[in-house]
Image 1 (tube, rainbow, N blue to C red):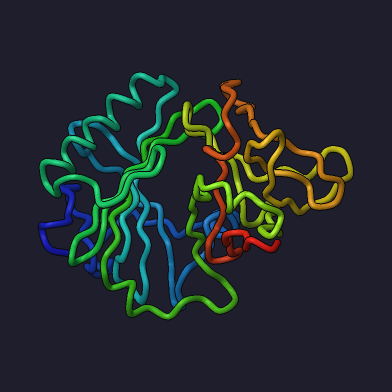
Image 2 (tube, rainbow, N blue to C red; image 1 turned 135 degrees about the vertical axis):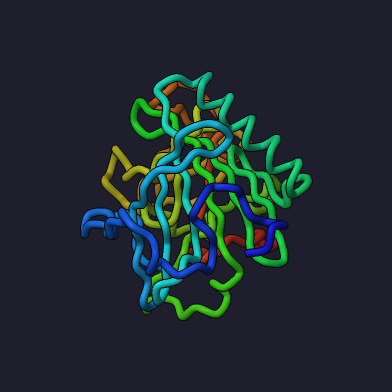
Length: 254
């Protein structure tokens, strides 16, 4: 990857071979079950840590046929302010090197470049705040995806009320989630607590957009984060995988 989209993280470089690297440990079966594999001949590794912006980071490498296509950096802290300071420093560094983010959605920022991209994400896992930095090479465009799998692309439903109608249904734990804009915690769409149905649809209540059970209609226009107890309008924190389910406007006769 050219310097236009590269981060200075020591010996790890995109598109390099891993033959000369030491201390790599391939993902366990449990880790593969969580993170999956996107491409044929892909192997992923936990690597020795690295220093970036004067802080220690955990490192993981995504490889295909022995060449690195992704570098993932993880900074962890149980202190929110510490994580925010780190995320702010990374944001400032990336803006200086790459300009303004190409895309921003919630707590995720992305910088596109001709030779790949860089993604910054602030999240929370249990009691730990995590700053993730992902650097991906453009070489992924030539890779063959793993059969019967896909990479989720999370999007928010447009605010326009015509989208919030039961014509848009089939949302489940596999393709939809809520993401708290306050603490960054993410939760898969729950099974209906009233009837046990696993599918939800969009709709309105009192004229306001929300998410409701397909079977019994229970649901709501608000969602409260189980982690930080912040209440949100459901329409602002609901995300779906556009590769798994489609969302469209209601037609005037529907």
